[in-house]
Image (cartoon, rainbow over the protein chains, first blue to last red):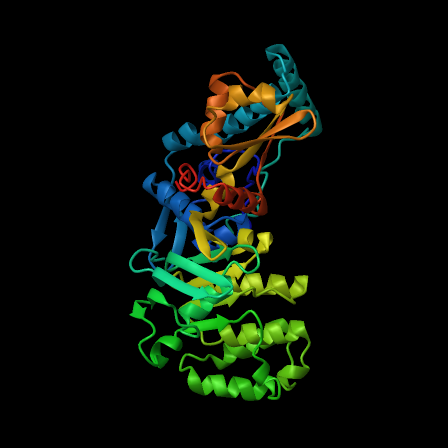
Length: 147
Length: 312
C-alpha cells in the first residue's frame, strides 16, 4: 500500500512530526477511511526510509488521539473519527505547509507584500488549472485487505 | 514489536591488543528487534567486532553476551543455531564443494532451516546451486551466502558488508528481504557497512566506529535531522563572533565568500537564529558520510565529550 506522505529532508522538523501531521491529515480528511488497514510499522519505515522507532512513535501518538487502533496480531486500522475532531484537524496540514512556504520566502528576504502577492498569484493559478473540483486527490490509499 | 528487554548483543569493556591494532575498550549494546548499522572507515574494527561476537577471536579482556548468553564458555551450538552470519569474505575452504552440498550440510545443522524459504531465496537471487562455490562469480557467491545466512530465519543476523559484489538489482532484492526478515518485530540485524544508502534504507540505529572505538550510538532519524549546515555570506572572521553561541555549532568553514556553519542540533540552532533575526542564505541537511567526517574530526581534536544535543 502506498501512502502519499512526503518528507522534507531539508527541514529541521523531526521526521516523526512531519509524518504525524500528514498521516493525521489523511485520516481526518477522510482520504483514509474508517477501517482501512495501515502498513505495518516496518513496512511504513521501509517506504519512508526512516526508522521503526519514528513510525512506532507516530502510531502511538495517533492511537492516543483515537485516530487509529491496533488490534493485536491483525494490524493497525483507521478508527472512526468524530466530526468535531475532523474539523479541528482539517487545517493542520495546511498551516504546516504555509509555514514552510513563508519560511522559504523569508529565506530569500521577501517582503510581506511580496509574499501576499505570491500567495494570491499561486491561488489564481491553481484555480485556473483545476476547473471542475475533483472528487479526491489520492484515492489509491486505504485499499488494504481487511478481515 | 518488543524492542524492550535485554539487548541482542552486549559487549562490556572488551579489549583486544595486537601489535598493529588496538580494539576497544568497547562497550556496546545492540537493541533487540531493530536494525543497527555499524558505520566506519576501513580497518576501524568492524569485522573484528563480529569475530569477537562469534567467538572466532578471543578478547584480551571484557565480556560478550549474545541473546542473553555469555559467549566464550566452550562450544555453544544452541546459541549458534539462532545466529546467522555473513562474513566479509567468503570462506575459501568451501570453494571445492557445490552449493547444493553446502546447503544440505546447513540443513542438518540448523533445525530452523526452511527449505521452501531457501528455494525462494535462490530463485529471487537467481542463483544456480549446482555450481561449485569457487566457480560462482563474486556476486552469485555473495547472494548464495546471503541465502544461507537467512534460510534458518536467525534471531540475530550479523552481516559484514553484505552488498559487496552485488549489482543494483540484487541489492534491492536484498534490502527487501532484510525488511521482510524484520517484519515479525522480534529479530535483530547488525550490519557493518559504509554504504550510505544502505544505512538510510535499513537502519534504525547507527553506531559509528573509528580506530577500534565506538564514537557513539544514535537513532538514525534523530541523527539525520539533527545535523544541518547553514550558509552565510562573508568570511569566517565576520561570523565567528556572531555565531559562537549557536547551539550545537561544530565548526565554521570558509568556502570562498560563503561561510558554512555545521551544527549537530539543527532544531535548536534554527530557533536560535530566528530569535536573533539572523537569516542564512542557504541550509542543507547533512548526509551520513558528512556527519561521520565531522565526528571523526571531533574525535581527533579531542572534543568527544561534547556529544550533547546529538544523542537525544
